[in-house]
Length: 124
Image 1: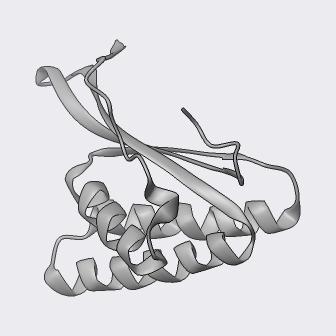
Image 2 (image 1 turned 90 degrees about the vertical axis):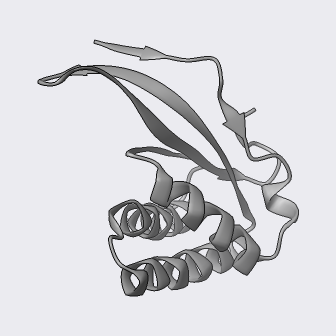
């Protein structure tokens, strides 16, 4: 069973930040998250290639257990966010909580949701 909570935090103005600042913020949030939901809302091979790089970088950040892994995830995110900007895309992101029933009972898990879209078409 899964249930969404309404206490979602959106990262407003993410597209106005420098790619390195975007990477820092996303790295911090992804490291706190337990799950990632990622979507590409744009056609074309470029969007999907950039999306794959962003998704890999976010996964690295979620899985980072050491300081060196966190630095690697940050570097991957900074590179991916620069590619997002070069491709004329934007990334919208937010953090919410999902209630999941597992072997240990009901748990609330933080989820980082990110949508890669053509400029002006990000998730609201």
